[in-house]
Length: 189
Image 1 (tube, rainbow, N blue to C red):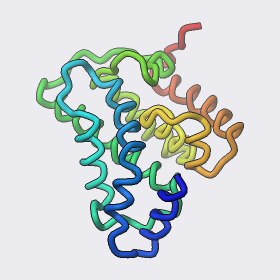
Image 2 (image 1 turned 90 degrees about the horizontal axis):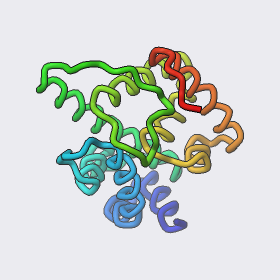
Image 3 (image 1 turned 180 degrees about the vertical axis):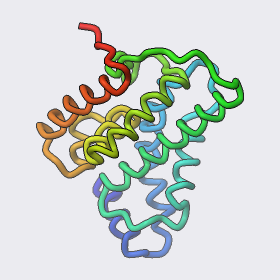
């Protein structure tokens, strides 16, 4: 982990060759992040975690990485890139099907490592998170890290530079806000 932090700092100073070393050092962690995202994809999907990591890496700049401030900044950007890739894929699949029956979804009813989430619900949650971002961007970022990236409170708090209790408070607020935005569906007791 210390090596990755040094590489991120080296990349911020634009030192030659650090992008390749950074990918090699963080690849396993990126792959775990991608696997967590892919666990909720519907059965029969064609994108694999490895492909998601590679596509996200390219979107982050490939060999020309941006100046990452720290480890949390990098993983936050990687999680956002993966979220956008999955949302774009869901939109393409829905466009190909020409719609589908919309369902009411409870925000907390979808488990992080639980059953797959279908394209309609993924897009509904994404739209609700975008609406939250217009009201409170920091809480929306927390939702992206926790819900879409599957980060723990501790990981998300570190990425955002906040305390874990603050992350838990923000999560409670965001969860309630999103539940109302998604149609007021109540979570199971």
